Amino acid sequence: MLNSLVELHPAEGLELDIKLATPDNFTGETLYGRAAAFLHRDAAKKLEIARMIALKAGFTLHIWDAFRPLEVQQKLWDHTPDPRYVSPTDNGPRSHCRGAAIDLTLIDSDGNELDMGTAFDDFRELAHHNNTEISEEALKNRLTLAGLMHTAGFQCLATEWWHYELPNLDRYAVLTDSLAGTQLLPD
Image (tube, rainbow, N blue to C red; front, side, top):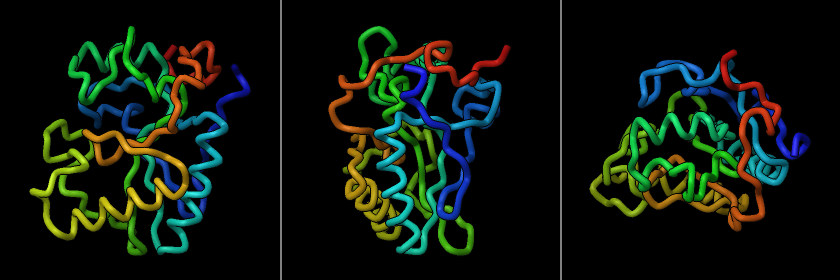
């Protein structure tokens, strides 16, 4: 298990802004002890494909979250027990807890986040992939992100434009921080 996750590092076309390592997230609490991102090896390989596609198109991948320990998932569920946006820890898909999901957006060549119609972790129907009440520009930007992530082998979560995950989640084990060896949780 310990070798199944790899740490992501900033690189050309990839930057990290780990929201759960700060109070700048929907809970208002710092939930990670350090700002790090991990993915299952399979997801990391597909993310590398997405990074290369983004670079060729003039974009940078801006990562907000990846692997999430089960302990943190429980805190998110306790705060917002809505399975459309937060997976329950007992019977939900828990894709982040498997290292098989990533939350991200695109940055343009000037360093600006693309307009996606809502902010990250906006738990309204406006953030759903099929919502057409957003601007034409935001719709185009969502489609650009979806296109490069799908081409790389990820699938989207219908209710969150920023969330992409590997198909066949049952192939990946749900991990706690101690099992994953990530040391994300504060001491």
